[in-house]
Image 1 (cartoon, helix red, strand yellow):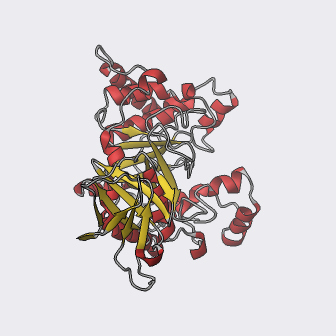
Image 2 (tube, one colour):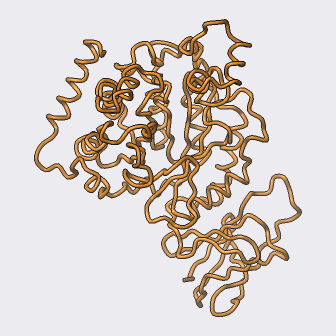
Image 3 (cartoon, one colour):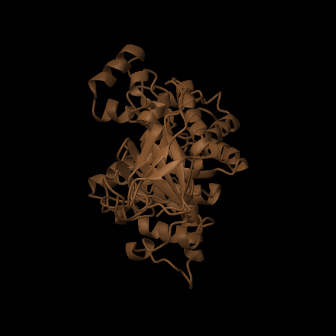
Length: 456
C-alpha cells in the first residue's frame, strides 16, 4: 500500500491537475481529440536523435536491459548460470544498485559527443521496467539514483548540460514494472484496479514533466493493459492543455495495448520499425548500435554492432520515408559511453557535417527511391532535391531517371561548390558526371549526396 507521504503527494498532484482544469480546454481526454493535435514542428525538423538505455541493468551488463526478467521472470538458463558462477547464493537484483555508481559520468562530455554526432535531441531512460528511477522519484523510495548508487540526479544533470548546447531533451519512461507488488496485484485483478497507476505511474509522469519540462516523452511498457488502465488520455489532455510544455512537447504512441501505430503523437509502432513505403503519419525508427541489446553488455562483440555504413544507410532511408532516426547506445554502470559507440556517433556526425542539408528539415520527395546505375534515395527541402547514393557508379556517371530537368537545372555535390556537368536522358532523367573519388579507401565516406536545383 502507498505510504502516507505517497498519498499526500498524490493528493497534491491531482489537486494541481484539477485546479488547472477549466474553461477553454482545447483537447479532451479521448483519442479523437488528442490525435488531432498538430505535431510540434521541431520534431520533424530534427531528424536524428540519440537514445540512452542506462540503469541498474548496466551493472550485470549481461544479455540485455531485460536481465532481471530473463533471470527471475523466465529463469533463463544462461542468466541462471551467470549468477551462479559470479555471485553468492541468495544474491538479489536490488543488490546491484549500490554498484551503479556512475562515478565517471560527465554530462558535459556526453553532450559534447551528442552535438558532435549531429543529434538534435537526446532521449534518456528515466525508468526502465526494473523500476529504478534515474532521478529522486518521491514514489520510488530507496530505489532511485539519489538514494542509492550514484547519489545524484542523473536526469537533471544531463538535462542541464543538453540545454546549454540547445539540444532537445526527451525522457523515456516505462509505465509498468515487472515485479512491483501493486502492479502484480492490478494485473491479477484483470486491471480492474488501478493502485499501481495512481500511486506510481502517474505521480512519476507528472513529476517528470513539472520538474524537467521535457521536449519529448517516450512512453513504453504499455502492452499488457489498455490505455483506460493507465489513464493515458487524461494525462495527455493535461499535458497538451495545461502542462509547462503544452505547446512544445512531443509524445510517441505507446500508451496502452493496441495504441501503437494508431494513437498518440508520432508513431514508433514497434522496435526497429521500418515501413515498406511512405507512411501517412510522422514516425520514428528506434534502433541500437548493439544489435543484441539496448543496455550495455560487457560481452558484446564487434561483429554484433552496426557499422557506420549501415547506420548511415539506415538514417538516409528512414529520413527519405519521412521518419526520424533514434540511435541507441548503452552507457556503462561507471557512467562512460564505450569507445566503440563514441566512434560510431562521431562518424555519423562527420558525415552529417557534409551531407546534413539533405537530412535536417528535409521532406520526403514525390519519389523516395530508385535503382538505376546505383540505388538512390531522395529527400527535398524547399525547391531543392537531394539524391543520396551509397555506391560510387562506374565511370563516375550517376544516372537519375526520375527528376524532370529544366533550363534552370543546376547540379552540385554536397561538400563541393563546383557545379557538375550533366546531360538529359530524355523526357525525364539526367546523367551526372561526378568528380573522381580516387581509389577505394577505408576512410572514404559511406554515402554521397547530389543536390539538384530547378528540377521537378
